[in-house]
Image (cartoon, rainbow, N blue to C red; front, side):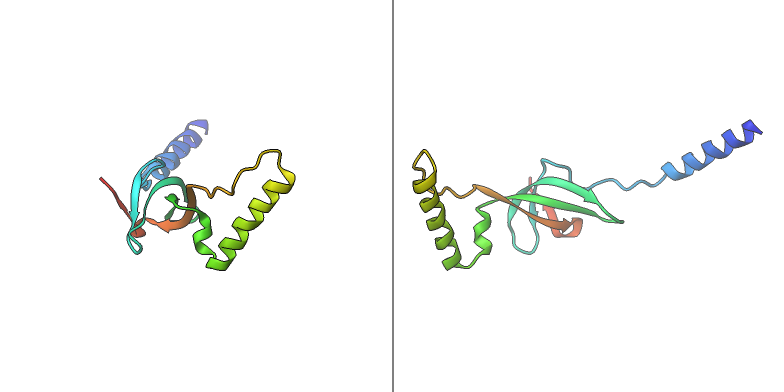
Length: 112
């Protein structure tokens, strides 16, 4: 009886291990988005259902998604806060990068 259970378990594991999909991109790979031609670095690879999804670290501040007036108001608010409440007077410095995604494998190309 134990031998049959062991054989069934081994057979199940052997069949289940076949055909595992391999990720096309890995964290740290430099890629280009096909639609926008934006280059970035893969930060995260997730697989929720069947397809791999990737998040990229792209140069530029995330404020590029905001309207121009909102960006100026945000910079002014940070300068006001730094002048009034912070110990050090520092201007608002935007992040040099931001995250974008998720992207599918078909949306990305590897950059040499």
